[in-house]
Image (cartoon, rainbow, N blue to C red):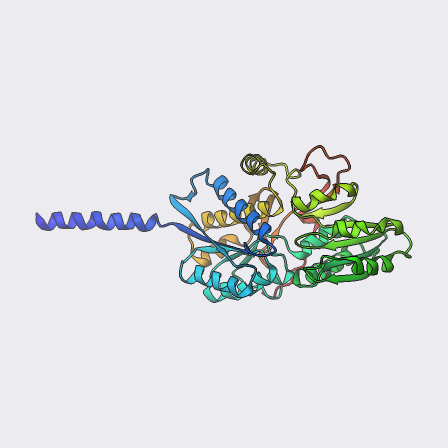
Amino acid sequence: MLHRTLGAGLAALALAFGGAAAAQDWKIALIAGKTGPLEAYAKQTETGFMMGLEYLTGGTMSLDGRKIKVIVKDDQNKPDLGKTALAEAFGDEKVDLAVGTTNSGVALAMLPVAEEYKKVLIVEPAVADAITGEKWNRYIFRTGRSSTQDAVAAAATYPGEVNIATLAQDYAFGRDGIKAYKDALAKINPKAKIIHEEYAPQATTDFTASAQRLFDALKDKPGRKVIVMIWAGPHPMTKIADLKPERFGIELAPGGNILPAMKNWKQFGGAEGSIYYYYGFPKNKMNEWLVAEHQKRHNSPPDFFTAGGFAAASAAFNALKTAKSGDTEKLIAAMEGLSFDTPKGKMTFRKDDHQAMQDMYHFRIKKAQSGEWDLLELVREIPAAELPIPVRNKR
């Protein structure tokens, strides 16, 4: 009898421990540059990521009966700190997967860490082409758009014969962006001509000299003349405009930016460009919920990187849900070719390089704006199928 009772007790104990193991939390690391010049981007990413998980789990923050725990880390926009944060997440905290980061230089430094630990890293929102290009490894997936996706969308907004001068920041993001833009133009609009490339330090505040070189390069050219800007952080649009490019018949073409930057573009009504996300463009239930809830909680619509954070949450959630495991090989098998809903609509991880294929938007700055954030009108949605994004990795 004692033996039977002891056996029953041990069985119950084993069942309890088994249940505890089965209910172990899912763990996801979210790494972002929360300190430094891209702090606003990082804050949006975190907000969007947490709201995305809330939406996808119906407010339970759980999946298959297991709680989802998000470990947030600040890399301060420093490559060494990014590497350390990711190594700690994989090695010490045993996360199932990681998401990050804001700065392309930091993201590039993190890629080998994912390979070393053989764990999945979802890159969001860093854009450098090298992330899913020559620096890529099989553990890397990206929900954020690439420089080439930005560039191809931008190239699609200026068809026909046009003379173009470019302005970008003198580091990986800017130089990658311009290279991608030139490559995209060659495919999409061979009639366009790049007349001049101008690079300025990230911390530039006086654009007089740069603007003069841009104006001099374009002013005597026949036909349409455009300055295309690829810039992260405080945007030079207003400062370039203050120098009156219109006296030479020169148009300004800003790349899409966060709402506080675009809010200052009201006087440029009619100017066109391309953008990754603007809250009023996508028409789907997920975006409707995000816009309504963000407005209610933060008294403003969701921004560029809020949608990106939400998309990364959807990728992570659907990967774990499909794989039913945090095992890396099962996750990779589940994620290659995976389609998942985002506030922008459906994204799909391309099998070749794990880049998320996604729609982009051609916008026009509104001349008549009815409210604080009523900034853009949609010219057209550019479907992912129309964006010829080359595969640049060596798989």
